[in-house]
Length: 504
Image (cartoon, rainbow, N blue to C red; front, side):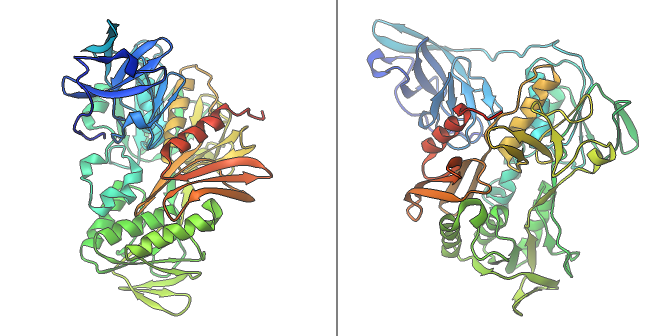
């Protein structure tokens, strides 16, 4: 999804003085019209593409970590020696180049051919339930790690896997084309021999290793459950009306856009991350938008009152209205009735009040399920040969001493990658630090960690000036760090979590 940009810096075919590139230093230049990042490490100088393959972030503004360059925007990681994508959300490898250092100059001499992936590692029959972040990244990881057996991806959504965070951001706002949403195209799945089955998985017989999809029985050697979550519904009069929508899929988003096209007023029910992103996107389309929610300040439980107030101010500056401390009691044709007696005009209503993990299939198969599908350190469920990942999975985190169920895109992708490796026998523990970003007007908020249940927080810098880091603690232990305008600090906080001892 990276976009083309004008190249920066010197012509690296002619070279640069070696003295300009210090140990762990970076330099951006260009070679044959391609932007290239030079990095000096202990073992020499490496050259890779200078833009993240996810959204095109400038990697020279990122962080060097153990032979990787990490993206400042969304924390993807790439191997400096090979350009290989090693951390989601970066899935496509960077270009890599041969470098020579002679006579006091560093030169790029050629672009390396695209390396082929290994094959023949296993011939297992692998079935994946779900085509979202976890399922799609698992399928890709299986092929990248050499699995040559059949892969079947079962998805109730007929659309190709998409970069779902954009459904409530640029695409909904009308600032991005539809083809920008899709992680891969049809040709990609055909090339990598991933069979996509559109249908509902209705029965799982773990003792026989059989999954039933719309009447068809699929036998498997290894199964990944990555069904995701469904939008939470409200028990309200009028929820069934055609102008009332939730937002989880491309189809949902298209319905919202179609309704918005003929609407003047919109009501968004819910002041969480999704609800306020939707409000901002609809306002960008020119609608009059009112947000109704029971809390008095957005994000208080997640990020504290100060950030919540800053986000609300940013949306108000763009013309969004707020009715907080209230609830919707009924939805009528063109009118929303609020608990304080007001009747708001609304030709479009979007309900954004959270999500519910899809655990019906797991419960039917008698897997261990609590707040989500329970998995062990390797993401294996209570049934042999069955793993789970993504929004529906709940894993024990020694770092935070609790079961986590994260509904965040990057975490789901990383879970899919880990589960895929373990289906091939890697036996790797899943220990990724949760990462999340959200955009509200001029405010882009990143957080790393798990800020649930904090009892104290410390603000460094100015939230109002969009230049701050907020550290959240419980009984003195750091739970999370949120940043605005401090990308490198967010990356450093993530590394601190990764390197902190886990409690076992």
